[in-house]
Image (cartoon, rainbow, N blue to C red; front, side, top):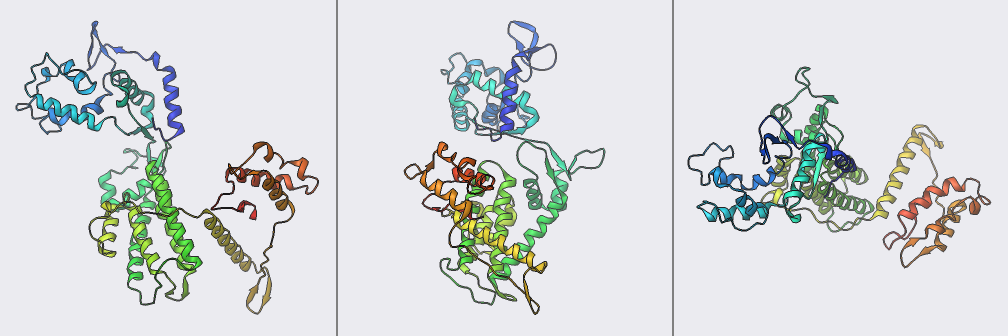
Length: 461
């Protein structure tokens, strides 16, 4: 089964270790009588956690009424649903011979619909149900059904808090979905819910995040309109400048990582990579392309691609906003929800790290300027940047050892040879080498050179 989080798997394993002590019967309440002793009922969880299978056929039994209130004209009566009928529908048993079920075609449809929906791919539920309901669900499916109908995945979540405090009607720290939608709008509520947290930790719905989402989405629409109506000339064609290439690469990264996060139901991470991260990349591109007040050296095709990708990536979380941008701002036909996931080239890790190094250097220079570090000429602070043409010292020694012990065929380092980066080899040349080389060697072992990244760039620092 796909469990998504180690904490959830550990919870199931712990429960499985003691569940054999759980009582299988009880003496009161609703439920099924134990066949060999009518004084007792089957324990409720043992008797109820196959209802997902019932969902697949319930509408046939209720004449389309999900509440089951229409009974007079029902095609099937409860007494007609014998064990043979359920064995045929759910367990691959033979066609029931001893049944007065008149509508055999309906029985066929029920079996077909169950086979269509099962096994269920994913069950969402709270972490507090791991030790009872969800584990019983696994047991009952494996006990009753054939293996190809067993559950494929569980995704458990924590409880939800409001503004970092437990929700409580008595204290007034409480919001219903309807209240949140009326106060913040549907999309801002969904945005804040996605941002509340992933995993089995308690999620925090923040009112500040909801208000910030309204502002962010509104500002994004304003920027789209401003750029599309801009009077300054924009270039066209494939990315040509360094800023173009970095921005295009960040878009590819956003597409790939956000797709993975959505696939793992990590909505906060999807929001981080598909919205916050992409926004940061756009802001950096805007700064890099600024030629003066209100004048930008944009690549029009790249800007349009950003708008297209950003709209598609945010659509699962903010569908109303995305549809508005897709049709009203970008003038596309149809709906963004049917537009499909954007395509992406393989991201360039080397370019991403190189740009991070550059941006970190720029930030350092700005801090130096604030502190007036450097030669002062008039009202300007002058600084010199030196770039070594080759590695030296401990870096050169590390590279020499690694180069000599790198297997070009397997593109890996031998664990034994990595051990050469120890005090015996390096201490004679540099007393600090062990402390410096250790992290670099570890990173190189995890990220060896490849055709797209031939240089061990982790040593550039």
